[in-house]
Length: 192
Image (cartoon, rainbow, N blue to C red; front, side, top):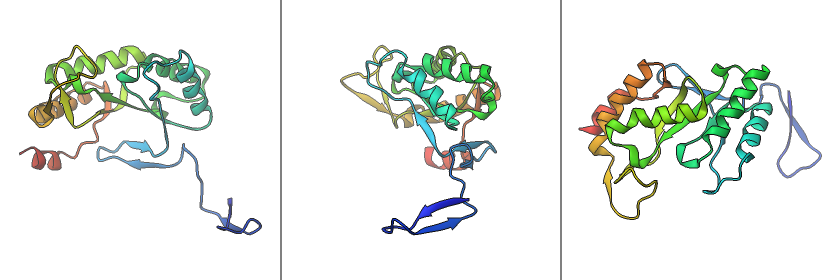
């Protein structure tokens, strides 16, 4: 049961017996049958991250009930995220399957031959066997893999989109990725 104050009246309360607000209990089903928690911790930080801050934040979030952790290679802190998750698993606080980790394919890695190596780099940094969701960071591909944020030029994502989706499905079948959360009919319609 939850006591919730009535708006603009500090001494009045309404009782809601069905309300259970927690990061662990609010989730939605994806088209492939997996669930994604609606409340999550984003691990984006200053481009010059302070060592240890993300590690502490992720550990604290898991202790407080967060089960959805969002990260990316370009945040430069995946190793801390992975360390915190692994530590909480070792402590028995959570099981790996209770954590929903979402990673991102960066804009310089939309070339189809770069997708799997990018995911493998993320898995190596996290030191996890799989991630739960791998999404495309932005709907455009930057030229050149040598820089994270090139100053000039970009190509559209549409050029490689269908091939990337095929690679995501193959990666999911290999168990490195739990969910692609793709609706293939919509993707096929939009890519033609």
